[in-house]
Structures are given as structure tokens and as C-alpha cells.
Amino acid sequence: MIEADVAIVGGGPGGYVCGIRAAQLGLKTVVVEADRLGGECVNYGCIPSKSLITVSKLLDKVKEAEKYGLRVSGASVDFVQMQKWKSEVVSRLVGGIEFLLRGYHATVIIGEAQVTSKGVLSVATANGAEQVSCKNLVIATGTRTSSLPGLEFDGDLVISSKEGLEQKRAPDRLLIVGGGAIGLEFASMFQKLGSHITVVEIMDQLLPGADPEVVRVVHRKLEGRGSKVYLKSKVARINKRGSEADVDVETPDGKVTLTVDKILVSVGRKPRTEKMNLQSLGVQTDPRGYIMTNDKMQTNVPGVYAIGDVRGPPLLAHKASKEGIVAAECIAGLPSAADWKVVPDAVFCDPEVASVGLTEAKAVEAGYKVKKSRFQFAALGRALSAGEPEGFVKVVSNEEGGLVLGVQIVGPEASNLISEAALAIEMGATVDDIALTVHPHPTLPEALMEASESAAGHPIHQLKT
Image 1 (tube, helix red, strand yellow):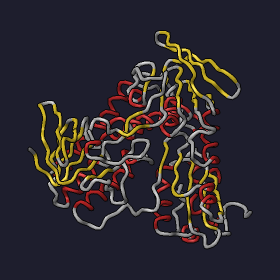
Image 2: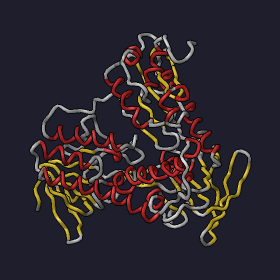
Image 3: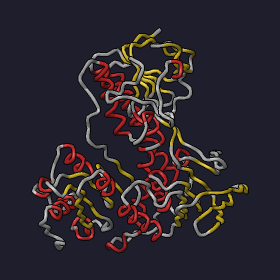
Image 4: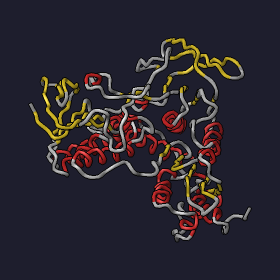
């Protein structure tokens, strides 16, 4: 029997960060991971997808290099080398996580954990069962990909994002079912790698819930490059024929039949708790199966915590990590809580999309008298010099006092730009605060300053409206 102050089930961005922080605080810590440290994000999601997206963007730049005066011929993708490079990136990060956990003297066990009684886990490892006795249990098991009736994954023709990242060639005709963040990232990536893309989304816009003005830029870019997008549509039937399939899609204009080589289904995720026997503890979940907690990550059962995606949306690695720190500190007796105002998010489609705080619609719904201001990247020197003029920065503020309520960005490096906006909202900044902050020139963050100047009533590089 291994005894611990805290046992963490799940070694993803929530679990391993919780393990590191708990061990730093002097708690005897055990981290149990069923597959590989780093979890879904590092091994099968965030990191490998961004690695391949980087390659696709580089290829795209090379293909259009002639307009910048750079002549390149014969550029092609070696998928074997690309996959090798992706795997090296992942392995390096996994090794780093293991190094940190062991460096802080946390115990790592690779195996499937199940609750046998309160404070006791049985872990099925490759070498047999390990028993863990813990004073505190942290559930960080994350989520798994959801499928659809009639579109069950077969790993070959109907695939999830995991298989999508392991392709040995770009499918000639790729159907993506689900136009959310993951679906759009794959659409943009494979489009650049040579696939003909079709996206089917059941809602009335891509990226459901996002600012419609932002989404229109991405939608327009996808279709401008030859992709087909069906909104308010769904797959009604598929007929597999060897290495391809005929797919009937119900659209507002009637049935459309497509012939495709791969169908990538990306319609959401479900909490991964079914194998843990949590019902024996009486842990409370919501109707969708997500574990319910307070702001200290405590469940309704004393000594049992939950962090990350298993707690529910937004399903974001950085949120999971912060929750892991909160849980570890609370277990150690520190006065910690999830007291952040906002959680930013980023989608690595083309162009990138990032958002933090309230959208214009949500701010109006919350009762604010809203002022919105935008600055187009087409008017920004750095965006033009980088050959990426599409998109804009949008600042949503309270008309009275100028408090920044939210920021939405669509355009180059949106994922990197959004952090300044997140800090501004966390610190209660006004549009004047951002406008008066000197930003280096020529850089992309100037767009946030320019949009804030407009919101403050004194735009410089656009006409006052």
C-alpha cells in the first residue's frame, strides 16, 4: 500500500500541475495516469495539432512567397518527417513533465485507477495492481471525444481528432462534422496541406457562441480558399465503399450527397469518469456527467476534489492548470480559490481567433450600456509588412467609465495578443489605461491600443465615428 497526502488521478495539464504544486508544498503526492503524462492535450491535442498547424502555415507562406519577391520551387510535405518532428516535440514535453514531478519527489504510477473505498485506489498497471491510500483525492481524468449515431469511429474512414493528427497523407476529400474550435483548426490545417474541405455544422454559424463578426472573417477565408461550409445542416447517412464513402447531408436547401475519403467527427466531448467507480463515494455530477465543485475545487464529498475538463466547460488546458494549483493549495491549507475574472481562449484556425471576457451580445445581455470599437489589421503597419492584413481587434467596454469588458481578436497572432487583454480585464483597466500605454512600433499589439484609443474617443489611425 502506497500512502499519500494527495492522490491525483489524471496526469494532464490539470493533474500534473496539481502534482507539482502539491509536492512543492510538502505534500506526499501520487499522480496516476492511464496513458502518458501530459494527458490528451500534450499527446493527442493541443501540442501535436499546433505542431502540424505550424508546418501547414509555413507551407502556405512558401507557396505565396513569390508575391513578396521570394522565388521557391518544388516545396512539398514529407509526412513521415513531419510526423517524426511532431512526435519529438511531444516526447520532449512528456519527458519534461516526468522530470519535474520526480524532481519534486512526487510518485508517478502509470495505470487505470479505480476507487475501491473512501481514500483508497486500486491501480491496474502493466505489472499488476498497486494500492494507494490517500487523505485527499483529486479527479483530473478529463474528457473523451463524443461520437454521433451512424458516425461511430472506425479509426480509418470515420476518425476523431486523434487519428486526424496521425495521417500519413492529406486526404483528397475531407469532411469535417462539427464547425467548432477543433473542427476549424483541422479544416484550416488540411486545407493548406492540400485537402478539399467540407464542413458541416448543425448551428447557424461556425464557432457557435463566438462573436458573429469574428466568425465571418474565418468563414469567408475558408470559402475563399475553396472549402464548402454547410450551416444548419447535419449528416443523415453514410455509405462506406472501400476507401471512400458517400455522405448524405441535410441542408436548409435540401439534401446534398458528397463523396469523401475521410470523415473527421468533432462534435464535442464527454467527461471521462465511467471507470473510476465514483458513484460509490456519492460524488455529485450535473446532468451531463461533469463533476460539480465549489471555487476551491472541492466536491460534495470531503477530501475529494475535481479539476480540469471533468468539471465542465470551458474545456481549456490553461484553465485546468490553474484549477490544479488551487486544489493543491487548498489541500495544503492555503486560502486559495478560483477567483479569476476571465479565462481567455484561442482557436488556431486561419486566421486565428482569440477572445476574453464578454462579447458584445453577452455584455448587452448582462445589462451594460455597451460601447464597441474595432481596429482593422489592414491599417496596421506590422500586419501589412507581415502579409497578414485580415481581421481586427474588437474592444467591448462599458460606455460609462470605459471599463474593458471583453476583447475579441481575429487575425495574425491572435493567440499571442489576447493575454494583454486578459491582464487588462483582471486588473480592472479602462480603455484609457490601454490607450495611454505606450506600445512599441511596428508591432501587432498596437491594434489593441488603437482600438482602445477609438473607444476613448480619440482615434489616431482611423476616422472618428
